[in-house]
Length: 149
Image 1 (cartoon, rainbow, N blue to C red):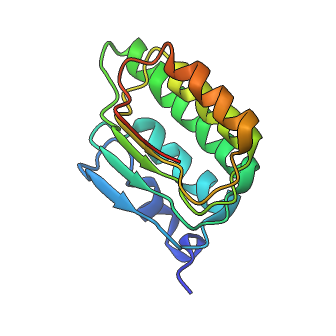
Image 2 (image 1 turned 60 degrees about the horizontal axis):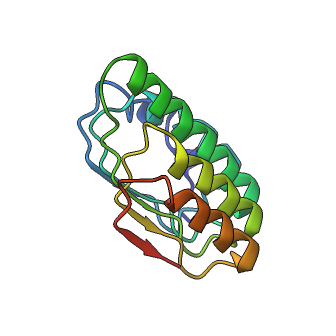
């Protein structure tokens, strides 16, 4: 079992501003809300991360909602610092995401600072309502080029 909570706090926080990591794959790590909270400070400050893989972590709608809060905060900080977010790919497949999680992701896609070009949302339960929210967001989003439902 690979639990992010077992990683020392300093290592989790080093995903932040000092880190030049571009690709972080935490698939099937039993991340959960605690793991997301552990990563949140680092993700808010990181300017080099381009690909984040969180597939198979059983994040559900609540975890995706928390992730979206983190991403919107990162985008706002980037705009304030007059830079863009480098995060271009996000994989949240296999996380039991439903319509509420899809709605949360649509708020990320609508954000002016969103730089995602690829969103992998496969093997979830987005349903018609969630897909509708994503479609509405794509009417204003100008960066996304690949969406895997």
